[in-house]
Length: 283
Image (cartoon, rainbow, N blue to C red):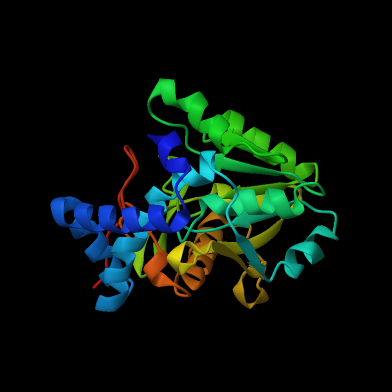
């Protein structure tokens, strides 16, 4: 099925995904409640929330094309900032939320900048053992490497940064117990990984905030380089709690650019097994 869908044009996949997104929204009360609650927590309008339902479906439907199909149209906005950061000779830490087409970020970077500075991305292996190698291989591209979400993967990321290479991850991904702290995210406590800040300080890597906008009618994607460093020019704190709050605030800035393309159905506020839960004071 994946190989069959990978040959479809983007506009057709997105149409199929839009329909699938709405069918899931209607059929699953749990999915619907989570999406609506998270969107309301962030203050989305009804129109933005409705658009996010279809965009979530598109996000899933485009994966076969991105993994196995022909290259898709990619534009860049603000890529001069990456070139400037590369000129410093330090490793780059690309951070993007579960927003737009985050799968396209690593591919676009490897294609545009990988020859000068290869990229290694953190990914969570498939739960089914028979799928793990297939998924990992489907994501590989020239100058694009993957690292699993375990100690071996973290060591691989640190090694890449110290070698002056590039690393990419999703800082709003909920980490396992003991690998995060509670920090505000859209006004509500969220268990937030400390790995982002650790990597940024490893080898004094340059943090880069970016996201991949999904264009309408299957016209491709635009990679927006939002900023190099933290918003406002502040330095990323060496204190884990403060740094987590800073990174969450940076992710909020990106999400508010196009909130309809954020994955509001993601269980961002879940508590990992064994992690102490903090009081939720959100109104």
